[in-house]
Amino acid sequence: MQELIQKRKTPDMVETEKLEDSQLAQEEDDEEKITACTIIGRSPFIRKFKEVLEEVEYLWTVKPSEVVVAVVKNDEQRQKVTLRHREFQSLRPHELLMGEYFKMRRNRLGKEDWVNITWQPGTITHTFQKDGTSCGVFVMEMLKMTVMEFPNIPKNFHIESSKRCIKTLRQDMAEEILKGSDSRDMFCSFCGNGDLLHPVIAALWIQCETCERWFHT
Image (cartoon, rainbow, N blue to C red):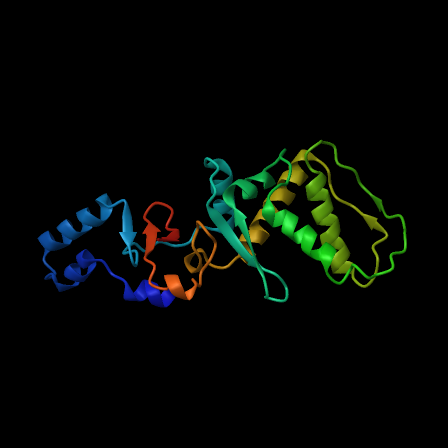
C-alpha cells in the first residue's frame, strides 16, 4: 500500500515541485492546499499524531460512523479483526459493549484450543458491578486477570466498581486497542484492508484532509 501511495501524485503536486521558491508561488500553493477537501496520493500536510488518550476522547465525542478506527492482529498473526467507530464508542461509560470486534474475540476463543478441554467447575469470589451496563467491562477485565495469572487460577477478582474507576477502566481498554492496532496509514478506513487483491491493485488511494485517514476507490 505504501508503495502505491508513494507512486501516485496529482498533477498539481508535480507542478508544485517545478515552481520557483518565490513568495507569491508559495502563497498560491498554500492557498490551493488549504481549500482542497481531499488530497489524492500523499498528503502535503504533516502533523504530529495525537496522544492515544486524546484520540480516544475525540472518537468518543464525535458523531458515530462506520469508519474503521483499528485493525488488530491476533496472537498468531494469522487473522486481523477490524473495529469500527460505532463499536469503539460502546466502550464509553454507561454503554453496553457491542460489535463484531468483541464478538470475534469471544467466538474465536470458543472454537479453538479450549473446545476439547475437560473443564473442572469452581468458584472465584469477585466484586460486583453497580450498574446495568458494565457487565462486558467486568468480563473483559476478569479474562485479562486470568491470562496474567495463567497457568494458575485466580482465587478472586477485585475490580473497583465506582463510576470513576469504571470510566478509567473503559479508557484504558480503548487505549490498549488503539495501541495494538496497525497504523491508520496502513489500511483503508472503509473496508479495513491494506493489501488489495490483484485485480484491484491499481486502485486509487485518497486521504481525507480533515481526519487524515486513507480510503481507496
